[in-house]
Image 1 (cartoon, helix red, strand yellow):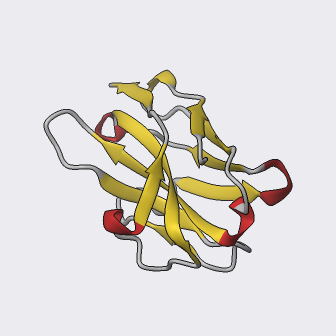
Image 2 (cartoon, helix red, strand yellow; image 1 turned 180 degrees about the vertical axis):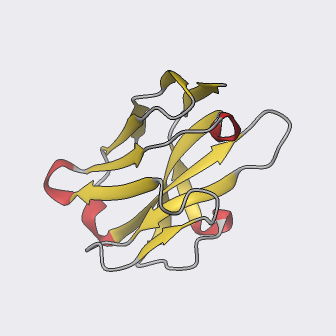
Length: 125
C-alpha cells in the first residue's frame, strides 16, 4: 500500500519562500522516482520537478528552474521541494507523485501511478 502525504503549503507574498514535504509510506520507496506536479484552477496538471532514486537525475520545468530545488532523504521516505522567489503564477495545488516503476526518467504524468492528496500554494502579488 502506497500512501503519499504532502505538507507545507500555504499563503505567501511574491518573492517569498515555502518548503513542501512529502512522506511516502510505501515499501521500497528508495528505488522509485519521485516528483512534484502542480495544477492551477482550470489548467492541466503539469510537472514541476523530479528526482530519481539516488539523486543523480534531477528534472525541473523551465518555469521553476533556478528558483525551486527538489531533494530526497531515503532514510526518511521523504522528498522536499524548496520554493524560492515565488511568483503569483506559481499558485496551484501541488501534488507529490511516485513512479509506477523504478528508475523512471521520462517525467510524464502517465509514468506516475501514485499520488498524494495535494497541498495548496497561494502566492499573492
